[in-house]
Length: 213
Ligand SMILES: *[C@@H]1O[C@H](CO)[C@@H](O)[C@H](O)[C@H]1NC(C)=O
Ligand SMILES: *[C@@H]1O[C@H](CO)[C@@H](O)[C@H](O)[C@H]1NC(C)=O
Ligand SMILES: *[C@@H]1O[C@H](CO)[C@@H](O)[C@H](O)[C@H]1NC(C)=O
Ligand SMILES: *[C@@H]1O[C@H](CO)[C@@H](O)[C@H](O)[C@H]1NC(C)=O
Ligand SMILES: *[C@@H]1O[C@H](CO)[C@@H](O)[C@H](O)[C@H]1NC(C)=O
Ligand SMILES: *[C@@H]1O[C@H](CO)[C@@H](O)[C@H](O)[C@H]1NC(C)=O
Image (tube, rainbow, N blue to C red):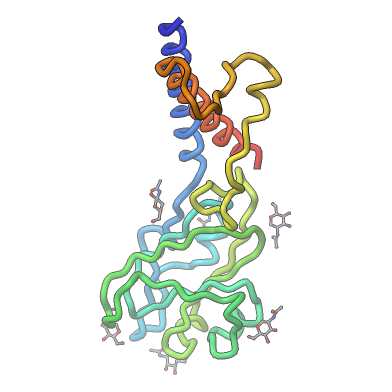
């Protein structure tokens, strides 16, 4: 009996790991501008890439990241407001729809990697508001359309996922051993393995839930 339970537990672990690996592979990190990165040359007024052309060939989904390889001469502004985007500056922008991301450095010209998670579906805009909007006016700007894809991973889910709920399948289908909730332990070792099976079942259940979103 113990051997059978151990085998079941092992296969549940394998299933959970496989599902996790598959889920991780479904999210993409998009390096903005490809190898050219996110740079503006103020001596020539030129961007290092054509960002709207770069974005046009890609599919962006919830849970993906935009990775800006840049330095602190450029900024990374995200907005959901087309008026703000078209203006190229953030002076009148609202805190609720416009966000500045930074890589943590305050020194002009320092190398910077800025990671922006995509957490809302629909059209959103990016630009650099540096040099009073001049960079943006010369092409440091692009828009993307974020699709649902497989939905947000739990790590980016906002608000946080609801608290623990018993897995519905376990009791009805009678395939998994019942989850022991007793606080006293009449036969210690047995209860332990039952509890860990229940936990693994929950993991598999939550992981498969994330596929349904
Ligand atoms: C994507 O970028 C995020 C944020 O920098 C990072 O946590 C994650 O590991 C990256 N994923 C891959 C597959 O590179
Ligand atoms: C860059 O553009 C600004 C206007 O945005 C202009 O004043 C400046 O002369 C331009 N510089 C070059 C090198 O073209
Ligand atoms: C977008 O993809 C098409 C077809 O794959 C290709 O011809 C075009 O050059 C690509 N454009 C960019 C900007 O990469
Ligand atoms: C967009 O931002 C402008 C300020 O740049 C603000 O006046 C306007 O109300 C915002 N639009 C929406 C739909 O929030
Ligand atoms: C950043 O901008 C300053 C001022 O325009 C310029 O002197 C410097 O070369 C730039 N640094 C980089 C790495 O582009
Ligand atoms: C964004 O993508 C969704 C799904 O593909 C589509 O229904 C929607 O029309 C697109 N929105 C824009 C503004 O392109």
